[in-house]
Length: 638
Image 1: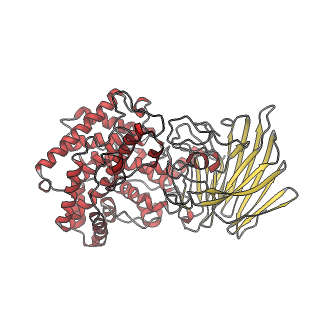
Image 2: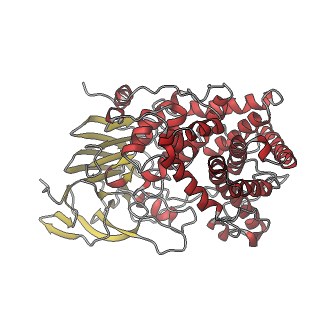
Image 3: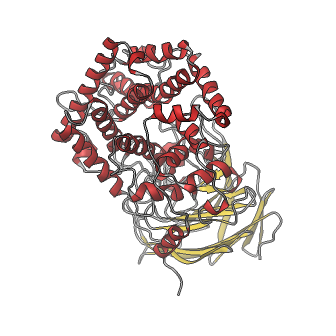
């Protein structure tokens, strides 16, 4: 009897090393302990070096007008450019608040730690200058973050609620004050910062009481927008004292536990790797602060214990990652996980996180969490997570032949009703041959990219079915971006895992809704280290006929050689080759498509491209079967 997808998840969890509880102490205490270890001198030097680079930069100053956004180390969200004058400034200021608080949260703890390590007053003065500036940032999150699309307006009263800057700003203040001694911060400044935090507590409590933000009204604890204000509430209460803020603290902890309970039992996060990194970081900083004061309700939660395995299983050969959902580029993205992996290691004791830092990245991050990891005992290869897994939540099968960078790898996407920040990618397949990308998806650029909806998040950005030649239609106004309407949001597509082992896998799925006129699309995928085979059977409803099209996004920008013989096609490019056959006459062409998977797109720079094969019937049909086989250059399609 073959294991089901959920059975495979359980097998993966059983195979992972046990996670042990770690003692969690205030950052200052933990830092002082590492200062006593001579062997950690190189790690301390890395942190101090990072602090010197930060100290050389001016402090972040809050923008007060639209003209100031983008100056003084603030950020202008490109979506503001498309907005009406009535709302442009409010949106730009609100988003700049998030970016400003995020910078402060990154820099202040490192600068404070460098002062403790070196005793150099320049580091303390730089921290105090930033804290003095932040003392005037009340509220930390100004209204306007909901105004990201034309036609939007603030609700009556001019408030849309606390948001991301709330959590990041409170984190910056609390971490800095946790590290500095009480006599390092002038009493009047400390009093103003405490008053600011009192206001943040009152604001978040009021948001939940009035159900002001959309995520409270819709009771959506999965989203980062729920978690970041919750972090602000919990941590502000902890700093000011839970005895005097008991009800607010319990509200925050209750909302935090609701967020932890909302995610998958095997550590799955329903918004993909990118948003998981952001949201789970918030969870860890909050859980850690609670545990320091003896409240381990969050840090011992099974989601946080299992999450490191789910995260590291996104790592694919060739320095790539599984980048479904709004996860950005894939190449070298493992390096960006170092701060999160370091926090996972010091908060949960995860052997998987410590193994990944040592074997899959350049090492622990150059911050307090990373320094603490250096003080932990090393782990061996027995701590590596399984090479393959199937997940029901954030529905996906992933596989790699080994943990070597030149191994082969594959992943297949399904669909779950809890998915958020997902693309129209049900049925998408990825394939890496010996560290070289063969089949990819388009990825995710910045949200204001003009092709975000039409070429990246839509079905056009993935290796999936399209019916007809009609241009993608935007979703409802109000979405962060407007991807195509090829599938309705929330289409459930479970994965039938027929085989998944160290040699490869076989997976099938069926889509019966989300396409106008479709009766069924059945996709079967089989792979090993050398090849991937995909068979698609498409059947339209009674009286329906349409062009059946599939795209194959390739991990190259090279021109592909396309040869036809007796209705079958052979395609060849430097890294791979393939054959394509069909039950009906087809046409195979190629075109360039924008790419944010093997490259990284950034504002103000020309788009990077990759080659995409277009496989479609030469006329409207009521059904078609199309089979494709892709192999590496050292193999031959059968």
